[in-house]
Image 1: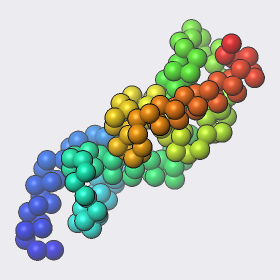
Image 2 (image 1 turned 120 degrees about the horizontal axis):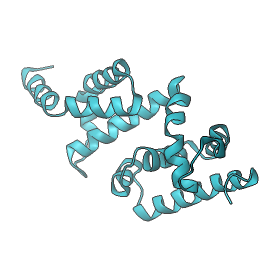
Image 3 (image 1 turned 180 degrees about the vertical axis):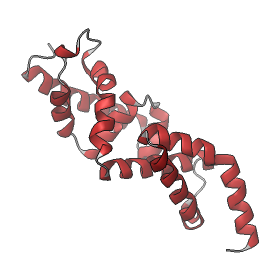
Length: 171
């Protein structure tokens, strides 16, 4: 790596490392894992930067790279179930509305309903309902039109509601 490339990486590190670390930590809820993601992204940046086409801002592209890296780590990690359990309430409220007692809601049943979705749809629902990402951001992350994402979200929620209806959790 020549001096010019090192300087560019230093500038990118100074501009983006804190926000990338914070994003990774928000996803993984583990500082060490978030730091691993940050380091992996910056180590690979010289070769992945060649794939940057400029269709979006660098920040959006790097954000997408971070989200993808985090999702891959979550899928491979035992913490996947723990992270989803923490977000079940948010997802459930978007599916069936607010509820008073957790006895009305069975997290295992919701997990069963979510498990019927494809990994992409499950991630989409999780990012939208649990993480609160906007459709325009999801459109860039999944490289799909907002209308398509709305349809996927609607179908995913309907699928999970039907499973909850079978158990008389959602009327």
